[in-house]
Image (tube, helix red, strand yellow):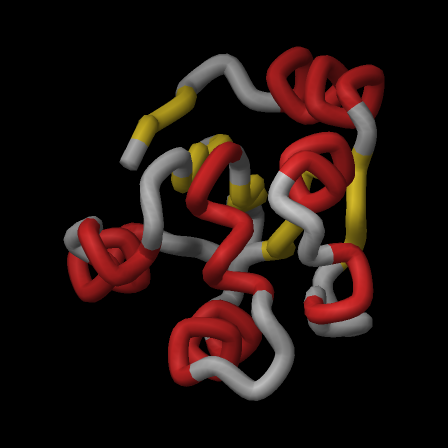
Length: 95
């Protein structure tokens, strides 16, 4: 399943999201969801401990001026990569 975190992790049900993640899942952080990839944040540690592969949309990071603050453990993806992830997963869930 592809999980899309589109709002700030501080305003989402992060605990439920984390419970739903499996090893075959991908999670992409979009819009204000990119705040979850901030270096040193509690949310980042929780996401990295999850079994899913975590991505961050590079364009949204750039739009928020956070390029140098995003953890290097999170892989940036462009819109083409985002499309590839949506093609990979028939099921998607937006958070």
